[in-house]
Length: 414
Image (cartoon, rainbow, N blue to C red; front, side, top):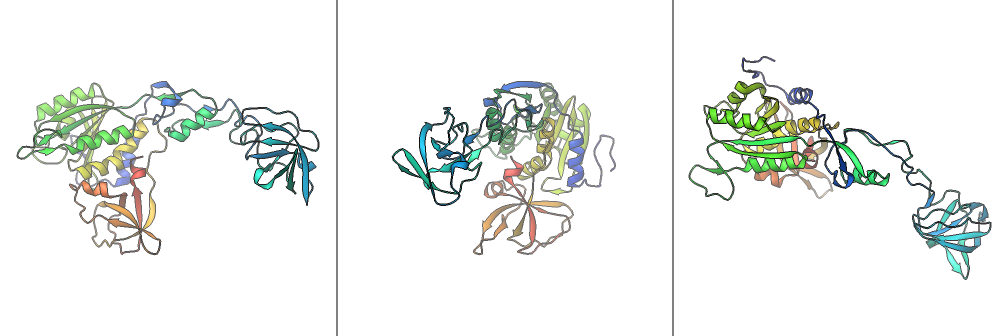
């Protein structure tokens, strides 16, 4: 790769993988750690591995409603009759089970001493003070042994895990009331363009509503970032420099939209180069070739394209993995899945293309990716219609029924 004096890569385009590798290599992980209540940890990133102080469950317990028995008391065939000696509900502890006895037991209740199996109630018949059921019954049947889920002293959650509801539940199951997490990443959002106005304002001639700002608000909130709205800066170099300088004073990362192309009124990349450095801005991807990355003072900088679909796609492919890595997340890349194409693609492109697509089930039961009919980078409605993106590698054609790589929004947006 060659670079110009302002740090921009020149005529050769970076591949998607080269750009992703470059960005992840430059993602500086946060160091500051906070302790938060487990109940408030959703979306945060664990700063240290957690060890269970207990076994889960902490005792042998019944997996079903039924009768706890000693398997050695059960005949291998025919009907066994045992005396019902006690009733054990969840949260209660029963007495020891003696030979010839059974205990009425409920799901989650501790197994009484001596019992090693549970016969489910559907297989039992009660005759007065006796319970009757057919054999055989094996030792361990319908019993959850102590430590079946988690053994005390083992790692339950690893550092770098982004906490979901299931991680919250698992931490609670071993008694962890608080968790060590990295502090939230501070991200400033700045829009560029004289034509931009906020929703709710009067739409004058030549003006457009600033959809990218709200798109970025949602994308960053979904990542658990601490968001700073820096508003809109006009198409003027000095004002752009001032806005960037102020944003860098409070943010770890600055994300902008617009002003990173090669037009005379595109000042963002020049302002970044004057205040810090600009490392890359031409990637072999469509939509979204003019993506800028660099630094303004100590803040990382991302300049996204102005077209809304380009902003969405470049954020998902490049910015989101970078921000996750900065937050301390270990697994940052989205997973793709192979599906059948429900469309034909005959253009041999020199850039990798990402088509907005929806999964549609056909009469044969097969799911196919149907492409939105208008793939322009300005058609934001296509992203609402779609379930995700179909990846079209450089120089590839596809016929209906061919395998294609599908990136669902559930992966791209988390």
